[in-house]
Length: 268
Image (tube, rainbow, N blue to C red):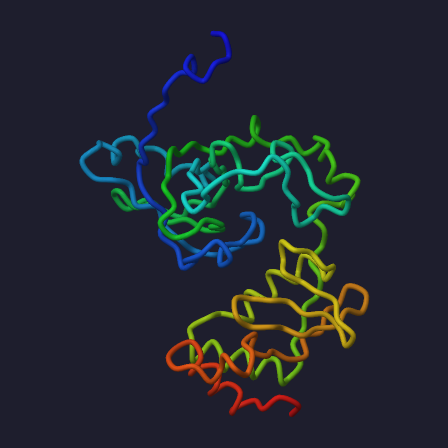
């Protein structure tokens, strides 16, 4: 083998099934299984492949590895900026980022039960429709190495994973998040807690910016205003991310944001 691309072996990979979960976009999905605690989902194995026999005995394992494909990625990056990095970008091979030359993911999830070709799982950090490439049991004596060092994370966060920040909602923000969830189906409060639990520092990955009156988190087309006091983050209010000229446009989502502005006038 000379190293030429013509000499590389051709690999054929086919999914064995697909993940089904409430997370419809990459932004909706938690960053790691630890951040997806108790989030339910299922893996639907493909029929006609004898996978029901391949899954025999797997139900004895409370934890399983899911090898999957980041199907929503369109390219890769040699350097990425992980959420916990405090010292700039890192080589992608030194991170768990999805932007990889071969977009293969690996997550340890809890297995509740198996019904034929359907695996019911928890701690799901994958997007709905994710192709599953393989399943393996999580074997504690060989897979867990609690004394292993954590590379650059040891410098960025000596006690990784860091204790979550305490995210609290003021009455106005709680009412606004409830209105948005009822009107649009977006579980905004859950998204805010999951993102801010990692910390308040401005970071492109989490879409946090610092302003004169506090900090702002962008979640889809909504802007969340919050302040930090130690490890407590106080969510004060939520506003639309659309400009007034955009709110005058017909159709959705502008009609919803106009109704929101009437329900919660700016400055109130």
